[in-house]
Image (cartoon, rainbow, N blue to C red):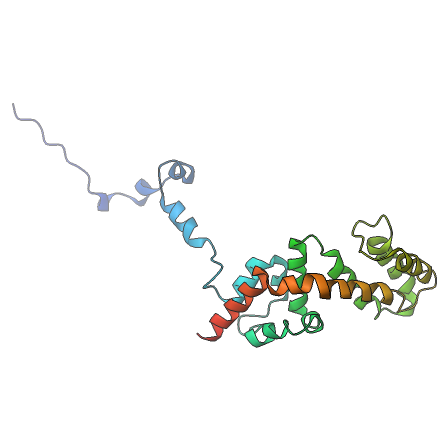
Length: 209
C-alpha cells in the first residue's frame, strides 16, 4: 500500500514568530548570533578614534569631551609637548587627567590630587580659606590622613601651624615638595608607560588618516 505523502511547510511561508527564540536558550547552544554580535562590540585599543580611545582608557574623561562636530581635544604635537616638562603636562587639563590615571596605576594618585587641591585653594576667596584649608589638611597632610602625602615632619608641622591663620600660600611649601617628587620619580616613568605611549601612537596614527 502506498504511503500517504506528508507535506513539509515551506520556511519562507511560516510566520515570523516561528523563528523567534528566547535569548537564554540561544546562549546554551554553541556559538550563537548573540555571541557573534557581542564579540563585534568589544573595543580595540588600536584602530579606534582618539575620543573612543580616551574614553576606554580614562572613563571619567568622557565628561570633558567636546562634541563630535568640534575639533579633537588633543593632537599629537600637544601630547609630545607633555614630554618636555612636568609643568607643560600639568598645564594641560587633559594631561592632568591622563597623568592621574597613570598615578592611580602606581597607587600614588594622592600626589596629583593634593597638587590640584593646592592650585584650587590658591584661588579661594578669603572668607572660605579656613574651611578649605582644614579639608585639605585633613585629607592629605595630617598624620592620619587617608591620602597622606610624603612630606617631612618639619613641613607637616609647619603646615599645621599655618592653617590656623590661613593665607592663600599656606600649602606652598608642601606643594613644592610633592611637585619635585612627581617630577623626579613618577613623571619619567609616565613618559615610558603604555598609557602615554599608546595615546601618542594612536594620535599620530589618526593624524595620518
